Every structure is written in structure tokens, then in C-alpha cells.
Image (cartoon, rainbow, N blue to C red; front, top):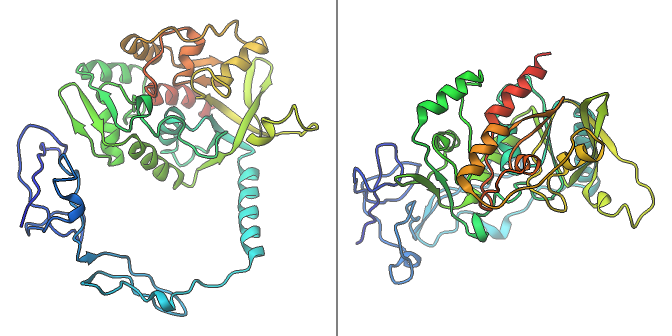
Length: 382
């Protein structure tokens, strides 16, 4: 009989301080018990190195939810030994007509398009900057938020760390009082901002809010996999009734009335990519009180918001990012996140493109959710 040993600090995060030995046991709930657990063969030390961040399930016990059906009852519960959790031989899905599936998908999506044709906020780009901004804004149930993402898969580069590595780390900012002073000075919403990847404290407070575990070191914290942040924030954000994500949709242009951005011009992403090979295909529109451009750094679909502002003469130039300097870049983007023209706020790495500030390490865009929030709040109150 073997046991696993992990170390936790008082907050429950992995640390070298306040060592606590915990014996892993069968998890019938999210809590640990004191019963020892026989180590499963796949976690044998001959093939697995390091400290498991969660107890492995018992090889002799399976846990499944209990599902109730109207016509037949299929029990999916904890079973031991070699017994199956349910009868696969007699398992059947309820029948459904293909036309019903088509009607349900089409009707609901078309209703979303009608609902969000005139909305409070349009966030262009569902990377870490856009998702964090939408998450913070949508805490107010009266603020309607539409997120536009040209890729089928939202998340941008936030699924991996630098150089396609999986770990995600955040630098700690020891000057917490300075952050609080800065936040109060801007009359920001009394919540937290995530300053993503290599970022300083109190970014970990946002991870705590989302319920994401991390390894806390002296000057930074590390998330086991960057996808834990992206998947968690998306699942919480998209469950809100005042948020809609339109993925595989591109923002082709801006709606501009006078000197003010008043919305975005949209189209299917595949249509936008093939205008030069097909006949004219007219777009759609979304009017908004505020547009947030979080399109990332320059590229085929990058920094599209500020590049369009330049092409129509609303800003003079887009000098592009300078060479990498993490500390200087993060400070600059914090300071320079702003309403770039009336009705349009630029955030994330796109800020570096418009101001010529240094770039950060790949995947380390600072998400100035709070600064964007107060700027947008001024418009939403009008």
C-alpha cells in the first residue's frame, strides 16, 4: 500500500511552505479522505515522475452520474469490481428527426443574430484579452455582450504557453498597494483583472475567482496547462444569458458615423477569406455603443481594428511592435490601453501595434479588463 504526498500552503496552492501530508483516497466527492489508496499501475513511479496534482481514481471503482429518462431508467452510479455501470447491450438514444435538429440550430442562431444586431458591447477577438474583458463586463446582467471570433475555435493563442509549451506562468507584482491605488483612481469595478501569462500579482486573484489551481513560486505562479484558464473562463462566460459568442465570424469593417465608431460589419470568416475568388457577397452588421478591438498583434487577421482605423484616416499610423522587452511591454500596455477613437477601445497586444511599444513573450498579452471596463462604462451609462 502506497500513499501520495503533496504540499499545500494555507490557501490550498502548491508550495514549499507549510508542508501538509495528505493521503489520497477514493474521491466520492471533491474532498479528500484519510483512507489509503492503492496506486494504479499507470501512476507507477517507473513511468510517472513528479507529484500528482489530483488523486488518481481507484482502479476498482467507477463514478458516473445518475441519469433519469422518461421512458426508461438508465442507472449510471458508482460500481465496484468488474460490473458495468450500465447495460450497453440495451442502451439506446431517444429517436429524433434530422429536420428537427436543423430547425433548432437555425432558429436559435437566427434569433441570436436578431437579438445582437443592436447591442451594448461588441468584443472583436476571443483570445485571452477579449474573453477576460467580456467576462468582467457581463457580470452586469444589464450589459449585453457580443463576441466576434473569426476562428472556429475561440481562445486565440491562449491554449498554449510560449513556443507551444503547455505551462502558463504569471509574474508576481509585489507592489499591491500601487495597483489598488491605480484601480481606485480610475474608479474601477471592485473586482480583479487578469494580466495574462507573464503578469504580476494580483493576477492570481482572478485565477482564484475562476477556481483554477496553480503552483505559487516566490515571484510568479504557474498553471499546469494554459488550456485550464481558457476552457474555464469560456465555460463560465458563455453560460451567462447576456453573452453570445459568434465564432467563425469575421469583423470585415467598422461602422463609422461622423467621428465615432458605432459597430462592426460582419460576415462568415470563410466568405471573408474568399472575396477575391467569388462574386460579391454582402455582409451583415452589429451596431454597438462600444466596440472593443482585441485582435492581437499584426498578422493575416491580427491588429485589424487599428489597421482599419489607419486606412480610413481616423488615426495617423500603426508603427507596429518593437522588439521584445517583457517588463517594459507590460507596463506600456497597462498605461496605454484606452479609447483610441470615440466608441472604440483597443486592448491586449493590439495596443503595442498602435503605439510601437515593445512586444511581450509569445502568449503574454496583458489583459486590461478593468481599464477597458471603466472606459466602456462611461458610454453604457449614456
